Amino acid sequence: MLSVELMRPDSAELSVAAVALDQADTDMWWLGAHAHARHELLWGNPLPELTRLEQRIRNQPTMTDLSMLPGRLLHADAVSLHQMLGNMVEARLLLDKVRSHGEASTEQIAAQARQLLLDRRYRQALDLLRYALRSGDRKPALRVLRLSGAYLQDGDVSAQEVDSVASLLLATGAYGSLQEAVPEVQRRLLARVRVHRAPSNAYPFPQRQLDVTERERDVLVALRDHSSVREIARLLGVSENTVKTHKRGLYRKLGVKSRAEALAVAAHHRVLG
Image 1 (tube, rainbow, N blue to C red):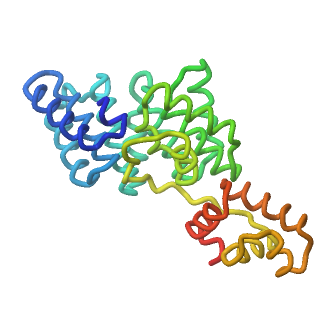
Image 2 (image 1 turned 60 degrees about the horizontal axis):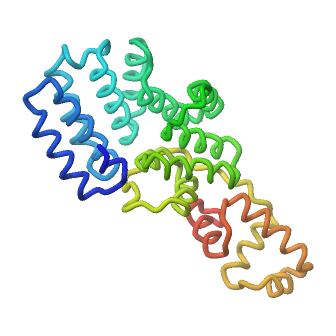
Image 3 (image 1 turned 90 degrees about the horizontal axis):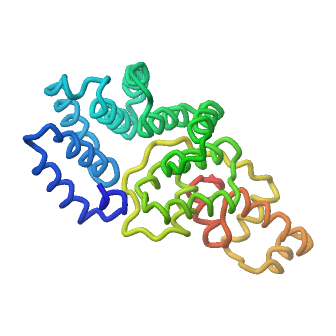
């Protein structure tokens, strides 16, 4: 699992295969199943993995009973795979089933909070995460989800908040938690955290609708062809200070620090249509 969390897909694949082989005929087979599910969530093909995982759960009803840790963990993996594939009805039904058994693990809380974000229930997700993190525990996946929830609800997160989560990822090496970030939050975290390879799969989180003013939009259009504040001011017929004010507001809403980043993020969100 270490290679998976360190975001080294090549060595992770070998490690997952080794764990699965070593534990295949023991009571610890579920460790290999969990590691394989995590690998496929990050870089692989979730659909066949979901089929395999559900078959394993059906074939091992005693070990995967929800009263058992392996059962709760593998069912949480199945929820994550459903969410990745956009199967929201199935994910919600399975979550309801998992929640009714025993104390929630970090994986279960993450799956529940993620579902709330996917359903655009941002306040409920943040309340759940705030409660789960109340003891000050360092739970990277939950911290990244809380950052994503704040971004989706408020439209922005502070550099200090991003730095705090990035420091936690660096300290713990739990880079697999980057998958819990919405695209803009993940981009800002990756600017602070070096990983071998970012997740190639992504949960279908909602896109934040950016509340860009008409003047900020004018500045954004001008930025496509002009990098100088003086040139943009002349083009728009306003003062340079006015351009600087709108540019600062635009960059803050986009969560960027440069012209190139602003244009890339604006294109992703189709701010200009």
